[in-house]
Image (cartoon, rainbow, N blue to C red; front, side, top):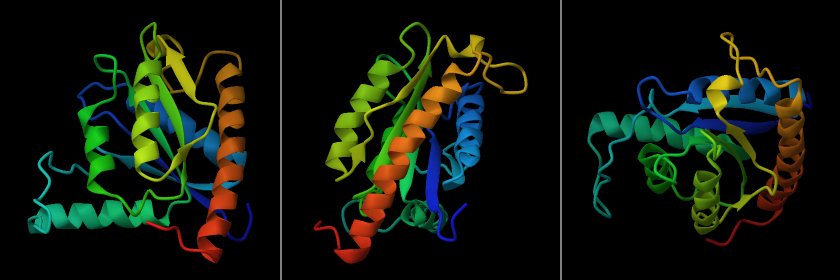
Length: 197
Protein backbone atom coordinates (compact mmCIF):
# COMPACT_ATOMS: atom_id res chain seq x y z
CA UNK A 1 0.00 0.00 0.00
CA UNK A 2 1.24 3.53 -0.76
CA UNK A 3 2.48 5.94 1.92
CA UNK A 4 -0.68 8.00 1.57
CA UNK A 5 -3.40 5.41 0.90
CA UNK A 6 -6.90 6.29 -0.10
CA UNK A 7 -9.45 5.90 2.67
CA UNK A 8 -12.66 4.00 1.90
CA UNK A 9 -15.69 3.95 4.19
CA UNK A 10 -18.05 1.00 3.65
CA UNK A 11 -21.49 1.90 5.04
CA UNK A 12 -23.70 -0.96 6.27
CA UNK A 13 -27.07 0.46 5.23
CA UNK A 14 -29.47 -1.86 7.04
CA UNK A 15 -30.12 -1.82 10.78
CA UNK A 16 -32.79 -4.54 10.93
CA UNK A 17 -32.37 -7.46 13.29
CA UNK A 18 -31.26 -10.51 11.31
CA UNK A 19 -30.05 -8.36 8.40
CA UNK A 20 -27.85 -9.87 5.72
CA UNK A 21 -25.94 -6.61 5.30
CA UNK A 22 -23.08 -7.57 7.61
CA UNK A 23 -21.89 -10.62 5.63
CA UNK A 24 -22.07 -8.64 2.37
CA UNK A 25 -20.36 -5.58 3.87
CA UNK A 26 -17.61 -7.57 5.58
CA UNK A 27 -16.98 -9.57 2.40
CA UNK A 28 -16.71 -6.39 0.34
CA UNK A 29 -14.46 -4.73 2.91
CA UNK A 30 -12.10 -7.70 2.72
CA UNK A 31 -12.06 -7.49 -1.09
CA UNK A 32 -11.22 -3.78 -0.80
CA UNK A 33 -8.35 -4.50 1.60
CA UNK A 34 -6.97 -7.15 -0.75
CA UNK A 35 -7.18 -4.69 -3.64
CA UNK A 36 -4.33 -2.88 -1.91
CA UNK A 37 -5.12 0.77 -2.59
CA UNK A 38 -7.46 1.55 0.31
CA UNK A 39 -7.51 1.76 4.06
CA UNK A 40 -10.99 0.43 4.85
CA UNK A 41 -13.36 1.57 7.59
CA UNK A 42 -16.70 -0.26 8.02
CA UNK A 43 -19.38 2.09 9.34
CA UNK A 44 -22.26 0.07 10.76
CA UNK A 45 -25.33 2.25 11.16
CA UNK A 46 -26.74 -0.17 13.74
CA UNK A 47 -23.77 0.54 16.01
CA UNK A 48 -23.76 4.32 15.53
CA UNK A 49 -27.44 5.15 15.32
CA UNK A 50 -28.58 8.66 14.59
CA UNK A 51 -32.13 9.62 15.52
CA UNK A 52 -34.57 9.84 12.64
CA UNK A 53 -35.63 13.33 13.74
CA UNK A 54 -32.91 15.83 12.90
CA UNK A 55 -32.62 19.10 14.84
CA UNK A 56 -34.33 22.09 13.28
CA UNK A 57 -32.09 24.31 11.18
CA UNK A 58 -29.75 25.98 13.64
CA UNK A 59 -30.87 23.67 16.44
CA UNK A 60 -28.47 21.57 18.47
CA UNK A 61 -28.81 17.83 19.13
CA UNK A 62 -28.62 16.47 22.66
CA UNK A 63 -25.19 15.49 24.01
CA UNK A 64 -25.45 11.77 23.15
CA UNK A 65 -26.59 12.49 19.61
CA UNK A 66 -23.91 15.14 19.19
CA UNK A 67 -21.24 12.59 20.15
CA UNK A 68 -22.50 10.09 17.56
CA UNK A 69 -22.78 12.84 14.96
CA UNK A 70 -19.21 13.94 15.64
CA UNK A 71 -17.87 10.39 15.36
CA UNK A 72 -19.62 9.71 12.06
CA UNK A 73 -18.68 13.14 10.70
CA UNK A 74 -15.01 12.54 11.47
CA UNK A 75 -14.97 9.16 9.77
CA UNK A 76 -16.81 10.44 6.70
CA UNK A 77 -14.65 13.56 6.42
CA UNK A 78 -11.47 11.45 6.47
CA UNK A 79 -12.73 9.32 3.58
CA UNK A 80 -11.74 9.66 -0.05
CA UNK A 81 -14.50 7.31 -1.24
CA UNK A 82 -17.57 5.49 0.01
CA UNK A 83 -19.35 2.24 -0.71
CA UNK A 84 -22.98 1.99 0.33
CA UNK A 85 -24.17 -1.56 1.00
CA UNK A 86 -27.94 -1.63 0.74
CA UNK A 87 -30.81 -4.09 0.69
CA UNK A 88 -33.98 -3.31 -1.20
CA UNK A 89 -37.02 -2.56 0.95
CA UNK A 90 -40.24 -1.96 -1.01
CA UNK A 91 -38.28 -1.14 -4.20
CA UNK A 92 -35.93 1.33 -2.48
CA UNK A 93 -33.22 1.65 0.17
CA UNK A 94 -33.63 1.63 3.99
CA UNK A 95 -34.65 4.68 5.99
CA UNK A 96 -31.51 4.43 8.15
CA UNK A 97 -29.34 4.86 5.06
CA UNK A 98 -31.28 7.90 3.86
CA UNK A 99 -31.08 9.30 7.38
CA UNK A 100 -27.27 9.21 7.49
CA UNK A 101 -27.06 10.74 4.01
CA UNK A 102 -29.30 13.60 5.19
CA UNK A 103 -27.47 14.28 8.46
CA UNK A 104 -24.24 15.23 6.67
CA UNK A 105 -23.39 17.40 3.69
CA UNK A 106 -19.85 18.74 3.34
CA UNK A 107 -18.36 15.36 4.28
CA UNK A 108 -19.79 13.73 1.12
CA UNK A 109 -18.95 16.46 -1.40
CA UNK A 110 -16.67 15.81 -4.38
CA UNK A 111 -16.02 12.18 -3.46
CA UNK A 112 -16.97 9.00 -5.35
CA UNK A 113 -19.46 6.38 -4.26
CA UNK A 114 -19.72 2.70 -5.12
CA UNK A 115 -22.98 0.83 -4.69
CA UNK A 116 -23.38 -2.76 -3.51
CA UNK A 117 -26.96 -4.01 -3.32
CA UNK A 118 -28.50 -7.29 -2.32
CA UNK A 119 -31.92 -8.85 -2.14
CA UNK A 120 -34.14 -11.44 -3.72
CA UNK A 121 -34.59 -11.87 -7.45
CA UNK A 122 -34.04 -8.15 -8.12
CA UNK A 123 -30.76 -8.06 -6.20
CA UNK A 124 -31.49 -4.61 -4.81
CA UNK A 125 -30.97 -2.91 -8.17
CA UNK A 126 -33.87 -0.48 -7.68
CA UNK A 127 -32.46 0.63 -4.32
CA UNK A 128 -29.09 1.31 -5.96
CA UNK A 129 -30.65 3.30 -8.79
CA UNK A 130 -32.59 5.45 -6.31
CA UNK A 131 -29.35 6.14 -4.45
CA UNK A 132 -27.70 7.49 -7.61
CA UNK A 133 -30.21 10.36 -7.61
CA UNK A 134 -29.52 11.18 -3.96
CA UNK A 135 -25.75 11.04 -4.36
CA UNK A 136 -25.84 13.57 -7.20
CA UNK A 137 -27.68 15.97 -4.87
CA UNK A 138 -24.84 15.53 -2.35
CA UNK A 139 -22.41 17.03 -4.93
CA UNK A 140 -20.88 13.59 -5.43
CA UNK A 141 -20.71 10.95 -8.13
CA UNK A 142 -21.28 7.22 -8.35
CA UNK A 143 -18.95 5.00 -10.33
CA UNK A 144 -20.57 3.38 -13.31
CA UNK A 145 -20.16 -0.26 -12.26
CA UNK A 146 -22.20 -1.32 -9.24
CA UNK A 147 -22.62 -4.75 -7.69
CA UNK A 148 -25.83 -6.61 -6.95
CA UNK A 149 -26.36 -9.93 -5.23
CA UNK A 150 -29.53 -11.68 -6.37
CA UNK A 151 -30.87 -14.11 -3.74
CA UNK A 152 -27.87 -13.07 -1.69
CA UNK A 153 -28.37 -15.57 1.15
CA UNK A 154 -27.63 -18.37 -1.34
CA UNK A 155 -24.32 -16.82 -2.44
CA UNK A 156 -22.34 -16.82 0.82
CA UNK A 157 -21.23 -19.66 3.07
CA UNK A 158 -21.43 -19.70 6.88
CA UNK A 159 -18.03 -17.97 7.11
CA UNK A 160 -19.22 -15.10 4.89
CA UNK A 161 -17.25 -16.17 1.81
CA UNK A 162 -18.77 -15.76 -1.64
CA UNK A 163 -19.50 -19.14 -3.24
CA UNK A 164 -19.77 -18.07 -6.88
CA UNK A 165 -16.35 -19.16 -8.20
CA UNK A 166 -14.88 -15.67 -8.21
CA UNK A 167 -17.50 -13.77 -10.21
CA UNK A 168 -18.31 -11.43 -7.32
CA UNK A 169 -14.61 -10.85 -6.62
CA UNK A 170 -14.11 -9.89 -10.27
CA UNK A 171 -17.01 -7.44 -10.10
CA UNK A 172 -15.65 -5.98 -6.85
CA UNK A 173 -12.23 -5.47 -8.44
CA UNK A 174 -13.80 -3.65 -11.38
CA UNK A 175 -15.71 -1.30 -9.10
CA UNK A 176 -12.70 -0.76 -6.85
CA UNK A 177 -10.57 0.11 -9.89
CA UNK A 178 -13.06 2.80 -10.84
CA UNK A 179 -13.27 4.05 -7.24
CA UNK A 180 -9.47 4.18 -7.08
CA UNK A 181 -9.32 6.36 -10.20
CA UNK A 182 -12.07 8.75 -9.13
CA UNK A 183 -10.88 8.94 -5.52
CA UNK A 184 -7.32 9.74 -6.61
CA UNK A 185 -8.35 12.41 -9.09
CA UNK A 186 -10.89 14.02 -6.77
CA UNK A 187 -8.50 14.03 -3.80
CA UNK A 188 -5.93 15.82 -5.95
CA UNK A 189 -8.63 18.23 -7.11
CA UNK A 190 -9.85 19.01 -3.60
CA UNK A 191 -6.25 19.57 -2.55
CA UNK A 192 -5.47 22.05 -5.32
CA UNK A 193 -8.82 23.83 -5.52
CA UNK A 194 -11.60 23.80 -2.89
CA UNK A 195 -14.88 22.42 -4.12
CA UNK A 196 -17.42 25.24 -4.63
CA UNK A 197 -20.34 24.53 -2.29
